Image 1: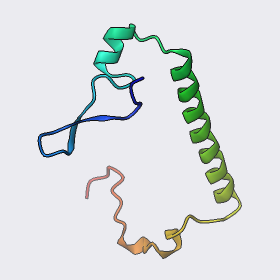
Image 2 (image 1 turned 135 degrees about the vertical axis):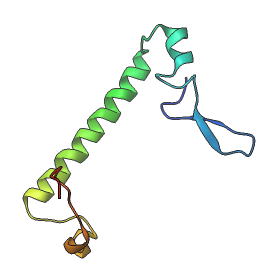
Image 3 (image 1 turned 45 degrees about the vertical axis):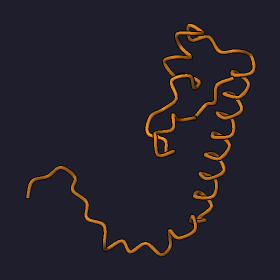
Image 4 (image 1 turned 30 degrees about the horizontal axis):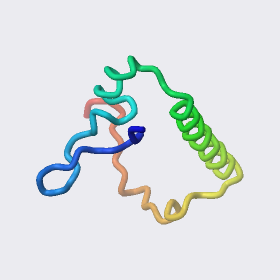
Length: 87
C-alpha cells in the first residue's frame, strides 16, 4: 500500500518531489479512481482522530493557562505587526 507521505528521492538521495503513488497522489488517484481501501480509511480516520485529540488537549492546556515550552521566553517587543494600515 502506498505511504501517506512519501517522496521520490533525487539523484543525490534527497527527496525533491512527492511520490505520485502516495495516498492522494496522481498515480494513486488514477489507479484507484480516488477510492480508499478499508485499511486506508482506517489509517486516515486514526490520523484525523489523533490530530483532533492533540488539538483538544492543546486548547485545554491554553484554557487552563499552561503555556507551551518556550512561549514564556518570547520577547513580545520583537514582533512588529502590520494590520494593513498605511503609514
